Image 1 (spheres, rainbow, N blue to C red):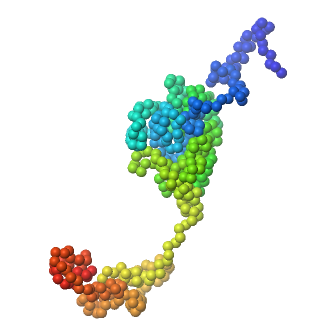
Image 2 (image 1 turned 90 degrees about the horizontal axis):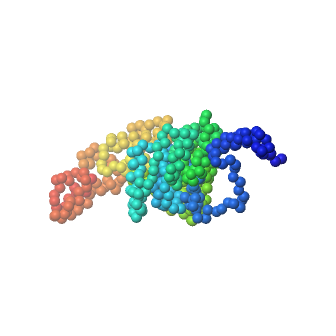
Image 3 (image 1 turned 135 degrees about the horizontal axis):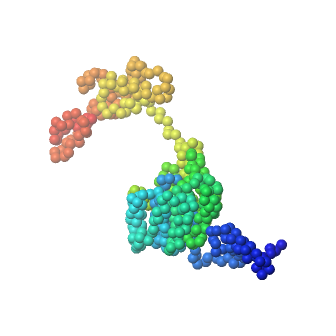
Length: 470
């Protein structure tokens, strides 16, 4: 049934009724008083943006009037990425897989870093970029990038202040870091997230959604956020790194990823200095390819290895190895590998032979017995903790047995003035007891083994046995 419209000519109170209806419509559309009806468009009225006037990042990842978010854990380098991206986009340079369609200006609203940290990041990034792109005026890019101080503003107050600032010479994009700091509520609170993005009651205050602000001013909003619930163990980390829908895990309430046009999450690859970037939403247009040239939604970047706060590319030749670490991390109780390495081959060398192989000369029998007993007992305790230690007499029997097998050699009593000496392997002993005669020509450095007896008093030339003793 068609609604009857009152006409002042037919009814004396029509003007008053119509005025009341107009007030009601204005109250309903209080955030856009100039719009009294919802626009109605035919499907044929929509036009392609072939000239990409509203596109800022290739593939439509960043567009005017749209919102995007990059999510990671604390300490992962989001602040450095925000500054590096702002400078690169100002000159149309790619940054961490995001290629600007054309140079554009960016505002940065951040509340995490003090001025000294911001200046340090700026200097590190400018130095690196100047080395990579020496023909670009990075000083002009620094001067054109604006940082706005929104400290203390959250929720509705933040949205209203941002709306007021964008009325005068708005930029092409606004980076907001961190989202949680300016949101002011629990990121898992669905009602609060919906009010922040779409509009409604935020706390005890009515507010329009931040989406409407960016659409009104035709500005791209890029948020940096912390993960709502970081991975708690190796399995969760592996699942997250390999999950193409990680944006839902990272953002908290589903109202946030639903409102965002694009999402990228990045986490450190365990045991490396590399970070895995996952285009969790609207990443097909970014044009990322792996080492084989196949399209992918995951790319790898790392910090500069010289201590500078700067994001660098990872050679694609390393991508397959890094992807294998991600796929197998946490499996079989290990980190970063699916199969445990094979155990080393068992050493079958007798423990006594190991002890005497370390001797470089003649030792007394008592010292040899002590060394053998200590080594054998340590080896036996390692295999069986409750085993009884080897006694001195048993140790002597063991030494005699090894001597009978030719593993060691017992020097005759009185050799070199020692009583009851033992030595290492037979070849070493024979070389020490009967060193060959060598010729020492004049004016030639003496081939003295360090620590050889009589080395300091040896003649400068002639034939001598002393030089070979060690």
